[in-house]
Length: 616
Image 1 (spheres, rainbow, N blue to C red):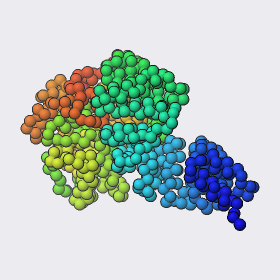
Image 2: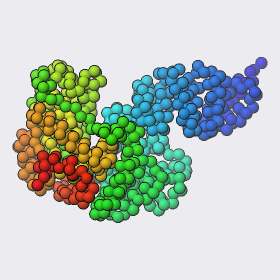
Image 3: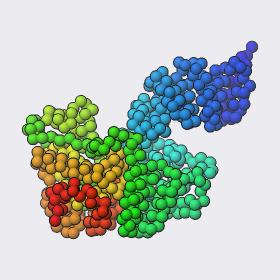
Image 4: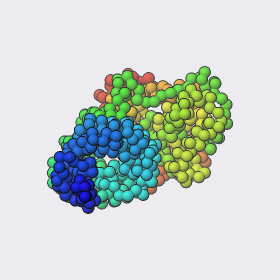
């Protein structure tokens, strides 16, 4: 005689596979008091598929209590609880599932999604990377792991997670927007645009909102790569009237659209129009990232109009929003006495113990461009990249990553630099050039330009790896540097904290240069100072001086840097627009408009201002 419960479960399975979730739930109602396990499973799955997350959680909890050894029931219970908003119950259920099946990639993925929802970014990053480790072809896990790395500013792991992303199938629109943003930060504009073109849109009206967001992001990507005509064409699909007509619950679409219009208004010099658009974004209920982005934009728009007090107030709003982000990633750095910049140095006695090792000659070594951020390093990088003898790789933290690799294998940095063997140093160089090769596979015989301002804090590693390397130290008036840092939206959570107040930023600046000068005394590297104010006043003179330092006969190609920069698809730093416009003195003494804000930190800065030659 057929088992009625088994027959019912079979009918429910057929309805589920046919996509008829309402019939699955209706059939479940026919079950008697003694509900079959199979019936419960199909009912719970249908409840979850139709958005009845509270009901699904109840049913999956009954299954988990009935069969507590089945990790899948706890896993699904965790998903249902997460989607219903009960994050505490979700964490309990998913932790139980993980204890039962520690190598189940689905469990790790769902736990990682929960941590993302809770903004526990470090836990999310670790858990999602574990999920990918168990299942390398798990695309959804790779995308979410990359996003957690993106928030944590772990660029290396982010790029590893997104390897091959250009060939992934089309993603749901929300995920496509995130993926495109990450790909664009890596400089892969084509993959980012392709991701947006293949985004899967849900039905109206949500699909209409997402379509506007995708068009707005497309416009921003084109603007970011200095393709202004394409940006304007994309923005035609996001008319202001359409944004105004959106319902109240479409704040993210409004924010994205208004920010895109504001970015193009800024490029057109319509500062007041841009300010009005950024103000509209700030009046919305949007997340901290959108608030900080709009507030930084507003500050720049006010600054261009000479409204310095209003600009500073907007900056306070921007930095408050960024501190919300940083608090979720690096809470330990929010202590008043913390040091967001990672500093490690070698004294004379320790350097004397370094084992003598062979090293590449100057012309076989990279040219390192260092200095505090916003000191003109991007301008110099583009000048060098315009010369056929050099090739830059945009801003990469590869030298810093070598210090982390030492730590990962139990070697202390910088103490154990003294004990490295020739083989170990060669392995580190090979690791460095492997990372370079992924960015510049066609480097060939050209000399590498490694521009990363805060490599100034990694001089011990540079001197161990490339002791004959030429180093260019970029200088600019400290107050102009700090103002420019304060007005930029940095992705690094540590730098968000550093720039959160002018006193903290000033202390970090002074500490960085004090360490630099101490290390220069120890290592005596081959360094030339590249002073921004002198370069913009007498570029030919200083380009000739630089060419001589780098053993280059003809400096003339470097003078054509603006034309060269316009031909590049992507420049990662905030100066991406300025370097396409040629030499300008507009940024010299810009801080004078903010003298009132700088007065409290001038006593701290003055000794360094004098030491760097700006005291007159």
